Length: 55
Image 1 (cartoon, rainbow, N blue to C red):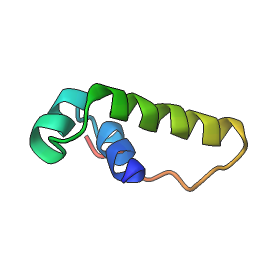
Image 2 (cartoon, rainbow, N blue to C red; image 1 turned 180 degrees about the vertical axis):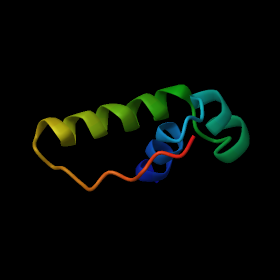
Image 3 (cartoon, helix red, strand yellow; image 1 turned 135 degrees about the vertical axis):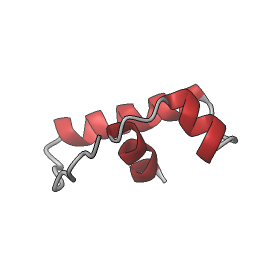
Image 4 (cartoon, rainbow, N blue to C red; image 1 turned 90 degrees about the vertical axis):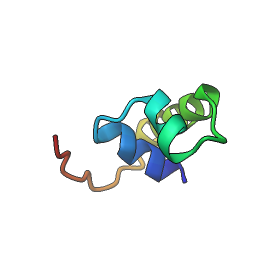
């Protein structure tokens, strides 16, 4: 589920919209945790292919 939230953020959705429209059981703390997890993976060198961001 972390990847879904990260993809939604990358596509330009706000944290509040993700909570309101897609995952109402999440909190802002959950989304912050997903971002911290992604940052720690990147820092550790775990890279994945980026997807194109459509705007």
